[in-house]
Length: 447
Image (cartoon, rainbow, N blue to C red; front, side):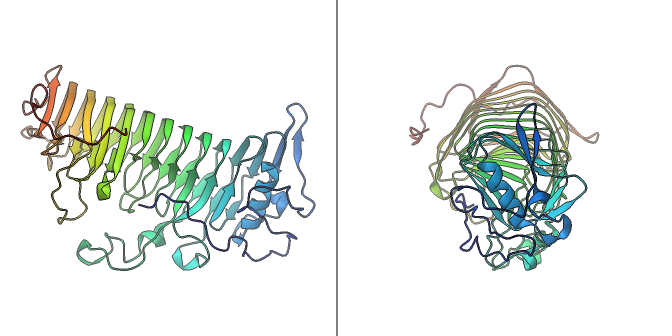
């Protein structure tokens, strides 16, 4: 998984539209805005907030015309405004935008108000050769921005999902050897003090929202939706990002509703309705022997429905670092195959080599987790490293029953140390007591 910002070689090579006289310089640090064709701004005299309507910069909004340049110029102008402004995508219109990087820092805060619909080109064959296929809209080095509104971000992902190199489309489920990049719909990179709220985001080719190297992020009241069979369409992914709140949202997709990558701290996830999906996950961590540090994560007051997993921690063998101080509280499982799972042997094939080092996992609390599970898998699975056991796992008020009237399956434990504060259903008698007498020294000092 690439974590770098992919910048096309020719961001300024877009064709001039006949209704525009200038080309945006959005790939550069913002300069005084270029002149547009008689743009009109609406100024609220009481609050001195200026509205920059993309149609004032030449956007058509018919869903066919390339409106990229109008959006770039509106951004450049709003970014250079001395006072906070609103970049408005008006209701009742659909705007097609090419892969674009909206660059900061800006002189003041910006509200990117989406009341209409925005969409990318329709599939890989329509994607310009000069544009990155790894991302669609990127917000880079922004401090103080709200992405909001009652509109729709439509990723038009179906043609990307159907590429023959996608595992679910290839013969026998095997990935075919070909280039298979798919764009993340919305990405924030190296940004802070962000709010994303109220929007419907659907059918992304890959992740719907991604945050890399960001801090102080508030996400609320989102509706994220893509088909259950759409590959790698995580709802919200965060990486190297801290001080995050994800509240009051509904997510259904073909991968994790929320995925938490390496370098994430102080993350609060609350009142999420998740599924169908792959659940809410920490990881995967430690791939290719990388160090991964994650701590102070809380997931609470949520529902996970008809999903492959419920709450999951997944790490690769050979990694370094640690996952610690994680709380899963007050979560209802509705027909979930693996409601509670720790997997320190995560592998996408059957050929991953055994390795001794591992990302350590400790201080994990599961409390008031109830509901039903699919009997194909045990309701709780704690598969911990041979050389570095999971420690201080705590379970309280956990009640998981099979969806049909069958015998309750026993949990699975391997090298997992912890306690039941209350008797669980089913009982987790396989947990080992105390602290391991001997543990391989794990290089997690950098966490």
